[in-house]
Length: 347
Ligand code: NAD
Image (cartoon, rainbow, N blue to C red):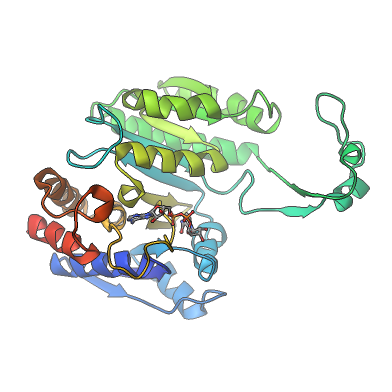
């Protein structure tokens, strides 16, 4: 028996997590699903249960449950976010040729501008009045009314995410993918911080025998829309990965479809890319596919690879049939209807 801790979050989180857990139980897999309490800070018993579990599945955070995701991602140091962007025939992509879109966004989860270190400009001016940009304008030239945010990058962070991305690219290469890492930064504007990623990542990828390319984030956004089939593993600094994974999700058919796995040293948890969607919460119409596919990634991580593939295959069949789809995909099915259809296809 393997243990799964399910933490729903809020908004549509509980709807999609409940439907996914019912589906997992319905598969007959030897899983015990625990739902310990949420709260801020996350209760000790929940932390203990999640640490001890074989798999952790999260729904979606909103303002009331941000402490849950803070613990899962930052306190537990899940520094690598893996966000597959994959089109299944039948998904409602806005692109003319979505068939075959299949790449990974790897988001560096622990550095950059997250999780927000901000302050009053007056304090920064007091500490570093002569900190200047490349035009010579200093911090004090802005006056003291205002605020600032701090972006932090380290060679350790860049190196470990580069090696992680290479590992994924090599594993995909073994399955016939091109074996390429695309780095996304904005080093033309931030040559020291983003430039550190350029300096460190390129040689690691090349030494690994993989193809390497680099695009600035604005160009990368355009390319993910225009040339999604040319992507394999797209390694993004934290904020860029956050933004581009919503964009990538949309090219494949929508935010309700995009799963993720978040990995640290000996720690992982799984969640949809989307948030709590307050605009549709409580209506039973949220698409559970992102959470179901996150559960498939979790099963894979738990060593249940065949079952994970079977679950993905079941999702693919439901979209191919096109009979049971939620409103975001042009259908009238409920969250539960879709999960039941996936279970029927799994069986
Ligand atoms: P969101 O992802 O919640 O929603 C964006 C849009 O996508 C909405 O129109 C929503 O209805 C739609 N959508 C999202 N998931 C869907 C689904 N499964 N099925 C159908 N439609 C879906 O983003 P937002 O509205 O900017 O943020 C709402 C809250 O979620 C905020 O508090 C934000 O901080 C939080 N958030 C949390 C996470 C996370 O838990 N990892 C990620 C993003 C946003």
